[in-house]
Length: 578
Image (cartoon, rainbow, N blue to C red; front, side, top):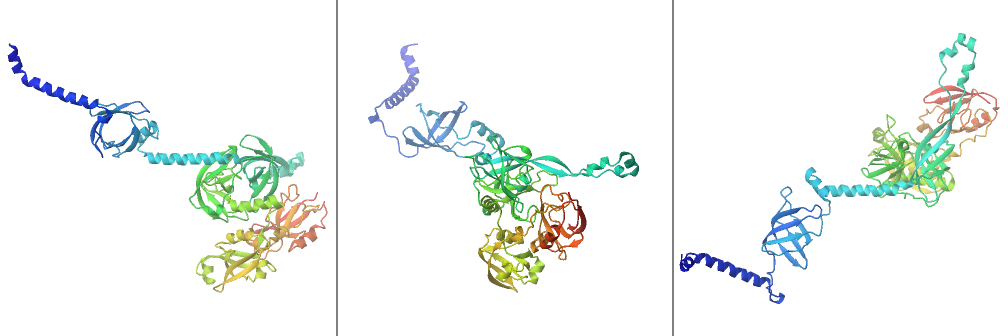
C-alpha cells in the first residue's frame, strides 16, 4: 500500500494525537511558569474531586477514599470540611491538619501530622461496643479525679491497733458440779471457775491525722481502756500513741504520736453536705490498710440511732466495715467531712448503711480536748420531746415542727429566762429547730456564758426570749471514786430530766444513775452504765448526797447489797468486799 493511501486512511487518528500533544504542552507550560507569572487561584471555596491516600500514624494503614473538600488557603495548612461521612455514625467531621502535597491532576497524598486524641484501641472499642467517645472521656476524667483524691487523702489515714486487758467470768457451771454426789468425791475444786479471769484483747481501727505534729482523730470506742496504742502510718513506720482526751457522748477521741511533718487532711464544713453528693470512705477494714470505697451521702441529721448521747450522723452507702471506725469520710475536694463510726448490720458486715460523725461536731470536741482536756458543753436546763401531729393540734401549731418543753429545771438558765413547760421552741440563735436532737446539739455547742435569743410558741403566739447559756453541770455532779470499798471505781450522778428521758426511766423512780465504772472495780462485772441505784444495804437513796453518806461508811471488807433499776425492772445485786 502506498504512503499516500496510508496517510489518508489514518488522517483522523493523527489529528487526534496532535490535539492531545497540544493540550499536554499547554499543561507543561503552566506547570513551569515563574511565580510572578502564575495565575492567582480563584477566591472562595473551590470544589474539587480528590483521590486521597491517607496514612494513619497509629497503625500505618493506607486508606483510599474519595471526597469533596472546601479548601481555605494558608501556608502549609488547610482546613478541610469533609462531605464524605462514615456510614456508621453519619457525622460530618471538621478537622485541621498539616499536609504534604504531591501534585498530580485531581490527586493529592496527605500525611497527617496531628493524631486523634484517643488511642486507636479506644476508637476500635467504640466501634465494637457502641459507647460514645464523649461517654468514655467523661468517665475517664471522673476516674482520674477519684485517683487524685485517693492519692491525696491516703497518707493522712492511719491504722490504729490496741491491746487491752479484759475481765470476764467463764460460762455458768455445769449442773453436774452442783450435784451433791459429785461434790462428795471431788469437793469444790472445780467451782473456782466462777472467779473472774483476765485476758488480753486486741482490736483494730483507723485514725485521721489533723496536724503535722502528730494529733490524730479517731473514735472513743477504738482506744477505750487500751493498755497500749500502736499507730501505723502509710509509709509503714510505727509509732506509740498517747490519749489526749476522749468523749464518750460523741464517740470522739484524740491521740498523739511523736512525729513531725506529717500529711494532714483539711477539715471541711459538714453543714454544706447535700444528699446525693459523692463521698469516699478511707480506712483499714479487717486490717486491710489504705482501703478506699466510694458512695453517696444517703442522709444527713440521723439521730436516735443509739450509738452516742449526741447524734447528728451522716448516713452513707460507701462501704464501711469493722476496722473502718475512726477513719475518714471525705468529699470530692479531699476535705474531711466526717469520722466513720458505725454500721447498721444484721450480719456484722457491710449492708449499705454506714454512719459518720459530722466534721463540724468533731471539730468542736477536738478543740476542747486538745485545749482543755475535756469537753465543755452548753446547758439550757429543760427536758424536751418531739412534737407529734396530735400534740401540734393540742398546742395550736400550724405544723408539727419545733421542740416541746416538757419540764424546766429549777434554777436553770431556761427558768431564769422565763421559759415554761408547754412552750414550743422553734428557733435558737437564729437557727430553726425541727427536732429535739437538733436543739440538744445546738445548745451543747454553744459556749457557756453566751446570751442567745430564741423564739417560742406559747398559747398559739410567737414570742422572743433571751437566755444565757451555762455549762452542762452533769459532769460536776459525779461523785468521786475515792471510796476504798466494794463500790470503789463507781461514778454516779443525779437523775435529771434529760436522764429520765434518755434512759426511759419512770417518773416514780428515785435514786442515782451509774455513769461510769473503772477497770478493776469490784463492781465491774456487777453493775453497768445506766443502772439506777435505789437502795444501798436496804436503805433508800434519792440523790448523790444520800449515796455519798452511805458509801463513805462501808468498810473495805464489807459486802454490799444494792437494789438496782435496770431496763424496766428492779433486781438485787451483791458486790463482795476485798
